[in-house]
Image (cartoon, rainbow, N blue to C red):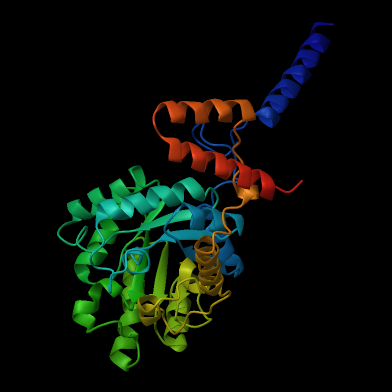
Length: 351
């Protein structure tokens, strides 16, 4: 009898534990009582990117700089949203990426973080904020995560000091994306926005630098403006994903700037800096231009706003009282104009 009761209690205990595990929000394989298990509606993680890379599934990356673009990127299910220092050119109108400050980048990062809830968020370290020392690099990276709401950072180049900076940031517990090939922050040395890897020495340097960044602990490397065979070699040599931009189809993923791929910017300055490798998937800029011209024309002709876009009413009694008060104030013309406008709106208001 006693042994039967013990077995019954044991079975109830097992069922209770199993039920508790089933109901728990904490994954069984986690060490701490941390976040809920990942699902398609939650933030993309490095683990998920690595899984895609292992399966040979291309990784999608879009560079965005503000809340509206982040919402669009999120809605489209893009894997990674990069808040690039290219905001210096695309948003602020500079000719290079060099002028943008860390504080300006943090504003862009926070706006994107509010709009993009699913993609992994990567923030660029702007020029002059990580080159002086490893301490400076780590401090800047910490700010990008804590104040900018990013999940990871990206830094450019493969000089020994920058590789050391990448290693120090990784050791501080921050995920780092590297960037080789055309590195816009180095245009002073490169002599402008010039493609890289077009001769033997330069091609070898691209691969060696990418490998050095991998060794430093980077989770991914951007390959910008290099010939496809060079990008293919780097992708083959690495066991981390490569993200191509103007580097051909043989990378682990691709990145384009939001404004560029939408064909959003039509003015001469942006046409000057829009890269040759960018495919425009829409001509949003033409739509914007047409809309603005139509708006200007309607305002000029007094056809906007009409009754349908003038929704706020005042009752007849209140209008009469308002006109009376205006007359008491000696504002007869104002009262007359107000009365005329009310009559005009009433006569043009569709029944």
